[in-house]
Image: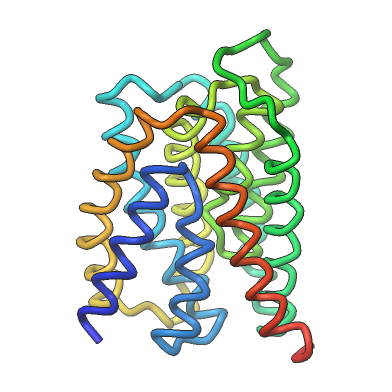
Length: 248
C-alpha cells in the first residue's frame, strides 16, 4: 500500500499548493475508502497531514509573494479557538451523517464558486474587521467538527468577503489552514487513534505535490483557478452523497 499512500499524499499536497484548499476534501475520503480508517480516525489523521502540508505550501507562497500575513493571522486566530472548542463534537455524530454533512457543505460552496464568475484580481476595498473575524470563526467551527482544514471555505471567504485576489487568497489560506488544523488536531489527540508512520508517509510525499502546486498557481489566471476549484469540490461532494445518503 506504500505506493498508494505516496500517490495520495502527492495529490493532497498538489491540491493545497495549487488551490489553497481541497486537502481535507481529498484526505478524509481517501483515508476512509482506500486506507480503511473510520471517519473519526480519518478526521484526526487528516488534520495532521493537511496542517503539515499547508505549512510547507505557505512557505512556498511566501517566497513567491502571494501571501498576506496580516489577513491570515487575523482570520486564523479566531478560527483556532473555535476549531479547538468544536473538535469534541465530531464523536457525537454518526459516521454516515458526518460524511453527508461534509458533502452538502462542499456542494453549496462549489456551486457558489461556479456561479460567481467575477474572480477578483485586486483588493477593491478594506473590509471591516468583524467580517474577517466572523468568517474565521465559522471556518474554525467546521474545521473542528468535520476535520477539514477549511481551505475550500477559506479561499472563497477571502475572495468574496475580504476582497483578496485569487492567487493571494490561495497562499493566505494555507497559513489559516495550518493554524486551524493544529487546533483541531490538539482537540482530537486524546482519541488514541493516531498512526505516526502513515502520517509521515503522507507528509513526505505531500511536500513534492505542494511545491509543484504552488508553482502552478502563480501562473494560472484567477478565473481558471476558481473554476477548477469549484468543479473539484462539486464532483467529490456528489460522490460522497451518493455513497452515504442511504446509510443515515
